[in-house]
Image (tube, rainbow, N blue to C red; front, side, top):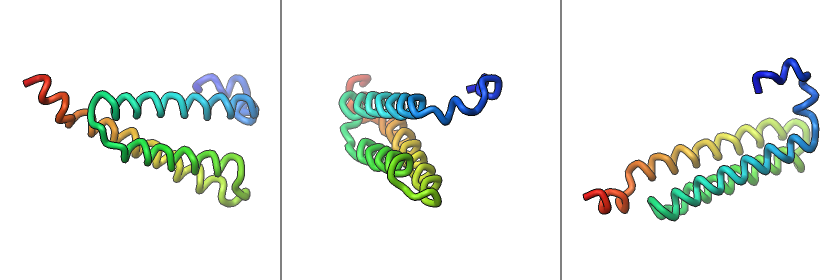
Length: 102
């Protein structure tokens, strides 16, 4: 990201780069949240929050009118961040891990 000014900002306008970043976001998010769900806390709410956030992100990128695009993308990104924060907190306070350590 730090070399983008050297490459020119048109790199971000490339459709393939956009699809790659969205795919990478989805894969990393699903992997980390599913691992937290499966191995630590078994709370589905972070996964649902991530799902809603990612759907808003996709809606903003591909279906929204120009004036709604930044709003939907921002709200979707904030929901994805909130899902990850919630997942981290649940993993840190995991009752299952506490039973194994005791």
